Length: 156
Image 1 (tube, rainbow, N blue to C red):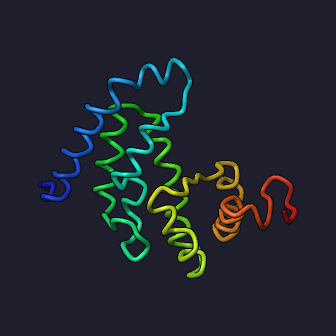
Image 2 (cartoon, rainbow, N blue to C red):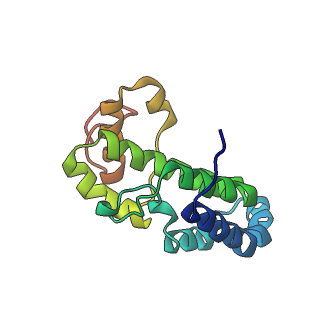
């Protein structure tokens, strides 16, 4: 199979690579050694639309495909793997809400997630032991602070 990246995919690689070379590589080691959260870099990632890459346009995202997302993650990882972790957990949560949440949940949460205004992540322990519908409820609970608690099984 001969796979060629299309123009959009090539542009994304160039844009992310330039961002990483300019903004991430020069400071990644300092953040890592100081064990500091890279808030200024994450803010730039928000501004560039990284947090809404695969979220559909109807929710304020870019609606890009998984190949574009893979390119984004690959280039971020080249610069600093921790940034890919921040984005990856956020996008995993958005994907679960998109595919398993109710229409009301998608309308309520995905627009803020698409802009990065809400940065959310999943609970690995919950994903190991919980059916998908319950996981979504737990993530929605984590977003809102209301609903079932995964830790105690109680309502908060």
